[in-house]
Length: 186
View 1 (cartoon, rainbow, N blue to C red):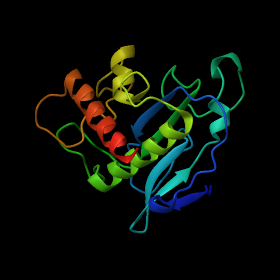
View 2: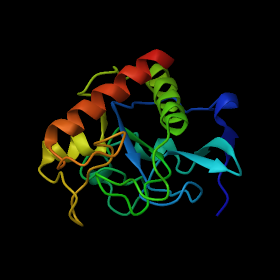
View 3: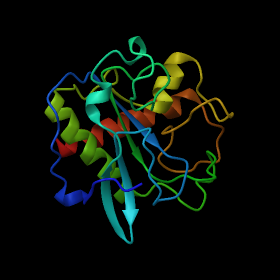
């Protein structure tokens, strides 16, 4: 399926008016190129250029999605999709906390992700704090499913691989670093 996309530096989203309270930040656990409609916006590589890809209609999450069974929405973060946007950097396929695999996070991709988050936060008036903009790992930590097992989540608990065992503080530290970067683009 083809989705609308723009080079990150040229991205001028035509965003709908409405209520958005939270932004959740992810990685896809796939390669740099394939995008997924579980998120609203994906940061991906197209050839060698970083692109912002609009994969899901924002309006579908501008409601209590759990009250409207059968209606489509971007299902990006377990039980946290109402009035919430999901954004994701494509990458991290076959990653582990100590080895980010063949498609690791790069500073350029993370900065593009933070630029997208900053624009969305500014438009929707979402505070850049840990209660309103968080990684999937931070949400999983709060909701009891943080980790590396199949039904657990650790995206984005680290920005660089580290041989130490993954611990909850990693998710908190990565979230704070991402929010600091988002503020720089605000």
